[in-house]
Length: 105
Image (tube, rainbow, N blue to C red; front, side, top):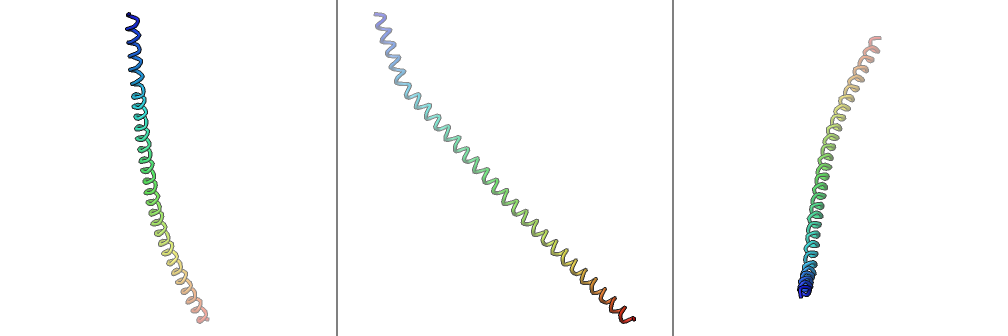
């Protein structure tokens, strides 16, 4: 009789384990899927943040370069204008000096 009771108990335990294993497996699978989704969502958000930061940095760099180019162009324009004016004045003075020397002879 004791072996019968032991056998029944063992079968009950096996039956109980067999019922619980699919539930436990489903819970593990669900947990893994939820964790994977969180990691994927987090990665997507992080990637979006990186993309936005790079876009903002590129925009700022482009603006800075544009401003620097505008300032450089302005400075070059002013320098060219002053150089042209100086050359014009020198040419006018030279012409005047030459004319005076020609008249003086």
